[in-house]
Length: 455
Image 1 (cartoon, helix red, strand yellow):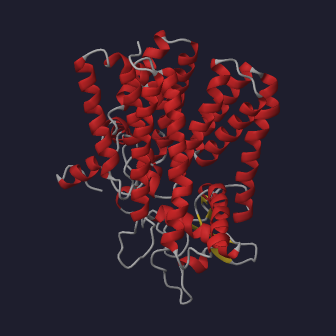
Image 2: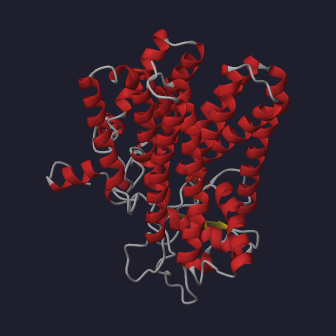
């Protein structure tokens, strides 16, 4: 039973979110490349690839990034060059370099950059620190703070004890990698925010029989944009469509499906504009059609180094992915409560709780299974990154499903102590890479230092 009035709980949520937001803002204000000769706030080849495209689109109206990553003498431009490249023939009949990243997000952010440039006169070429940090605030920090508010409302709705609810909000604010990635341009944070918005508009449809047309349309946009940023999230888009179709087939067909199709058309359309092909660069890796095969390419098998070579053993990969050096449960120990919570809600929850628990369990198994069955070249743990970043977008679902376990543990001192211990480990893992999410997890660093692993 609840011990405090709702206003007191919400005040605590607000304080936790405010502290988390302030911490993210402070980190973004100081984000900088580790290279002293590269005065940019870009942290890896991954985000530099996106920034190069944003600059090319915003300044020159093209997806070609040749003149950004190379100078007039053909030398690599420090601070801008990236290995996340493809090369293919452009509309002018000549070979050009392009980012290998999906085009929809970078196209939208190029529009954001264009507005900033029009209003302030600042450019990524001349003032990269100012422009990039401002865009990180607008793209990551503020939307994520808004998402935390929505998550707190959902947590308050589904939790049953004050202690369990506050624990869940604290986890959302400090113990997941959503906030860790706030200092770098990436698709995973954006995808997690999209899922939060999708849950916010879809849950009332199942909970209170709310059938407003705009909710179905907003769900289509949210889940569609989620899938555009995380390919395995197509499974959740389909499942959401089926669930909403069960509640109202007419609204799903007239509002949800067209909204999702708008995102799909935008994603495919921008890819065609960029590459002249509806297939993404990732699909061009075959013999005779390999966009990653160009002079100096890092992605040729003989050039891959370290963790990027891929894990030879699928079993070792599965171990490290779950409980090893990039483990979901070893790094973020608090997710053990999500497994327990899913089981509790599936066994004894009400209909809305069962829907969330079953959805979380099914989608998690599908996504984890997808990455476990990838070929060796893709079994690379996401490259140099502080967690298995491909699963980051599932965080909102895991936060909701840890609630029944947290509520149960709150009834005893030992339960609260165990949950706090899990929280400490999870916060430590998230904070370890606070300066640069494109770095290895602490377990990986420790095992490497001890000589237990070698990549």
